[in-house]
Length: 140
Ligand SMILES: [Zn+2]
Image (cartoon, rainbow, N blue to C red; front, side, top):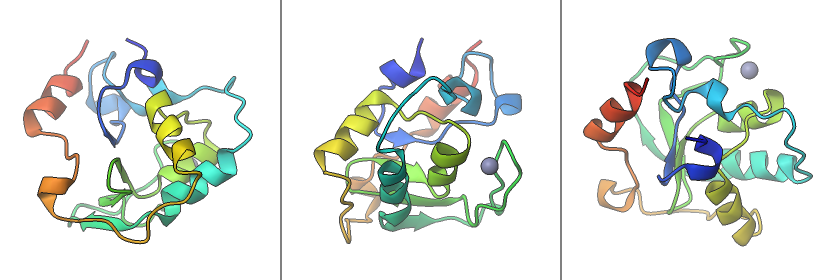
């Protein structure tokens, strides 16, 4: 499974490699140093500017790669269609994280302009289910 090409969800939150199976969608599975993408900065700006839709009381987030304080990583952002964790822009800019192709295409379609507000009711958000996450975590 190439997660970048075949990512089937509308949420994006890679796991910590040491907390999941080898084939699970963890951070290392999305590193692509050969990806030349001229709009990388606009992509990151989009990720950082979309509205926050959910704040949980999980611990503060630190970057998996460099340990930087990313603020509240348990806070999720959404553009109404996709959902991702706060701080994803840092990974895209600093650590060669390549987003799933469908996610990039979606942002391009929106011409890199995030909405000012979105529905933040759970029923409108593409939240991963517990069963989905458990299944993905254990992929060997
Ligand atoms: Zn980092």
